[in-house]
Amino acid sequence: MSSWKSRPLGIAYQTLGWIAFISWSFSFYPQVILNYRRKSVVGLNFDFLVLNVTKHTSYLIYNAVLFFSRAVQRQYREKYGFDEMIPVAANDVAFSMHAVLLTLFTLYQVIIYERGNQRVSKTCLSISAVVWISAIICVILASRRHTWLWLISVFNLIQVVMTAIKYIPQVWMNFRRKSTVGWSIGNILLDLLGGVMNFSQMGVQSIDQRTIVNFYGNIGKTLLSLEVVFFDLLFIIQHYILYPVKTEKFPIISEEIVAPSLKTRDPSEESMNV
Image (cartoon, rainbow, N blue to C red; front, side, top):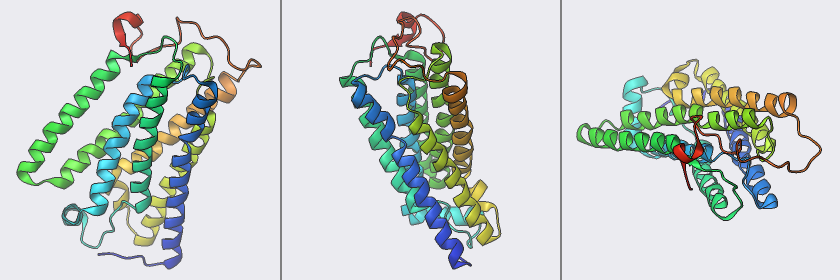
């Protein structure tokens, strides 16, 4: 098992990781607080939330299993080298657990607060169903051959794909409404900081170990950081440049544009109640 060659770099690794944990974890709260103050979730895309549950649950499975399972760690080192460090840190597991809980709590807010005519689209539900059915099939296949590293890599891939998909409904909703009201920019700023810190943490490990194995050995974490930075910058452009907040506190949002889904069809054909 490899260890840190430089103590300062090891400390920097832990520091960056926990800064990422704090940033990403606190990024959930501005939206939760905004929903509570408004007693409304109008402007928050429900497809984003549902896809987020699948994303964070998949990421939790990957992080927790690789961090705690010696059998999976052995398979990792057999594949990438016995002197390689495990690319998952305690802050990764802590973040994933927190993310699942806060996303579920935000879904609870959707149930109890005013949501207008917004719905979860059938397209979103179909995507989620296909993903979980595929995951179950992979679990059955892996259990026969004991290919546990391959299995959690599938969950890591799921979270990468879902990260890319989950942002699209909110980007599209902001574009159609020409507004970001109801979507917390505080969430985005903290999310961006977490993505940068997460990528920097991997860079520190790579410098210390003089290898880039951790980047492709945990390709999910690498791609996650890049995706987060890309979409957060897009949201920042929408909020501050394209659709700056007006003087009205909460503008009236018409029924026609408040519930865009992953497909641009009539809501009665393409959506259902939460």
